[in-house]
Image (cartoon, rainbow, N blue to C red):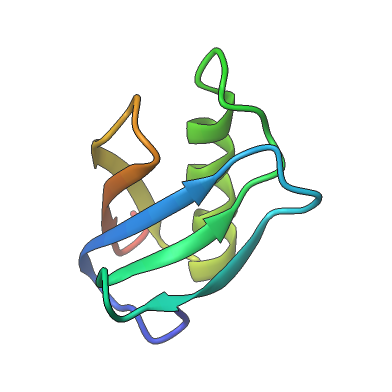
Length: 80
């Protein structure tokens, strides 16, 4: 995932995991599988996902689709 420069990516989120981590790229579904420590309630998993990926990629990350779904579309852009 370090090779991602900018653009839109698909992720499949697994909340309530022991730790936050990028698991792998699922080439069949064309999505990154990501474990997130936060629970999927009160938007906590979404917030943690954005913070985690922003730190990992050192880029701005925004959810553009899938706020209430495990499958999400994210926009990755250069930090301002």
